[in-house]
Image (cartoon, rainbow, N blue to C red; front, side, top):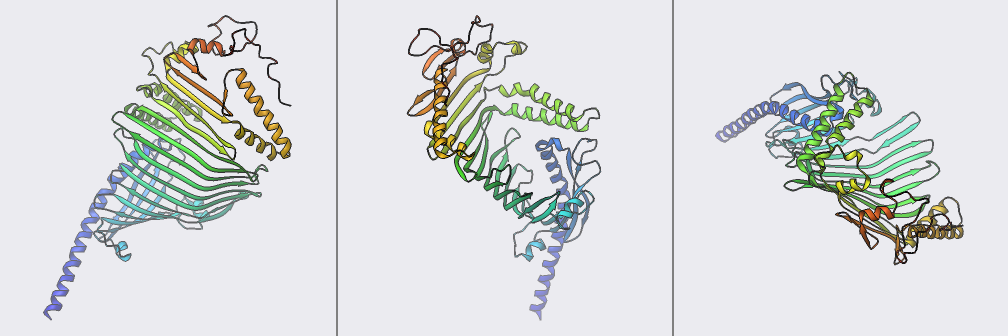
Length: 516
């Protein structure tokens, strides 16, 4: 009997402790929601200033073991030019189970102490009636989140399949799974999204995307800008029946990285394609990388803030039309652009490549810019050569185009348009030969190991073009790039002098015989 009384006493004590802890946790949650909403609005304004959106918490009803709340997305007071009309709301209704052991997690046998477990879904209201009509009365997504006592939030989101028809077009979406991990202050964010397929069909024209996979891992850096990695992988994109030219892109990848050091930001975004088929012809694969380095971090922060301020102003103005608002934003961008040149930033294409069965072409380009002079009044009136010396620190371009690869590409293009193989090969060979002769005639290209190439370097007022070194002024004069006033006009257009002789300049007209 005594043991039974002890057991009952322990259960009652635990129940009382759980009730007390849940009640106390409920009070903490109510306070935390306001802080989280403030953090979310700050990041929303930085990332999407053009939307004018703001998040609010409404109708919080606290119980002992659970609470209810509505998170409402609407436009800021005074905003007149946003996508959402004033007074409209996108509402997410949430049921919050209080910790330390939220009932929703206990049911799943997840016994990790947590501040709360939250179940959320869209609320069917006037603004979302069209969406709920498409989803047949169901919320487009449901989210289950675990809130730790540190304030971080881990969420699993299910986006439901959607199948509907509108204006003669049929849409089919397989649904998606989303997982996220957000720190309390949103300074660290990780996100992953996976979806099987999206199909759009209209008048026997089909657009299909298969195997969508996105993930990102970012953290707020020292310049209040997110740094980290983002990757998008798509298994296949196909377009059939569109313009009578079927196209399949396989292995589409977009990878980006933003990093920082003590003073600068740097970034790289790479686009790659494992395969391109047009009318069932394999045209090969390609890759394209864009880089930026030595971007002064504090200047980027100021530039971003100026853009956000101009965008926010355009949303609340009574006088600005859409065109005027865009012009005001563009003006803010260009007027603040010079601050980005503070640390001689470098930009590049490293590289652009395309590969088929006969070879691989590549193009690499780099340019380092100079900080603008304090007196900018003369920039617009500068001659081309003076502008290059003033604005560009160094620049390089390297191009390698294997002739067999170019010939194969041109042959395939001609065959795809109905030409027979023998004639397509002959015409392609002549076309590439003419391209080679034209490039050599103008001393733009050379041929090295059966590849057409360009090697250009500029630094400190000197140029090296395909192995020949010269001052910038001579280069611009020889290649007819100088301003008309820089050199005396000649009665006819002339060619740069040959490397092998210095007899006289050759007239352009009639030098290259077109391919027949």
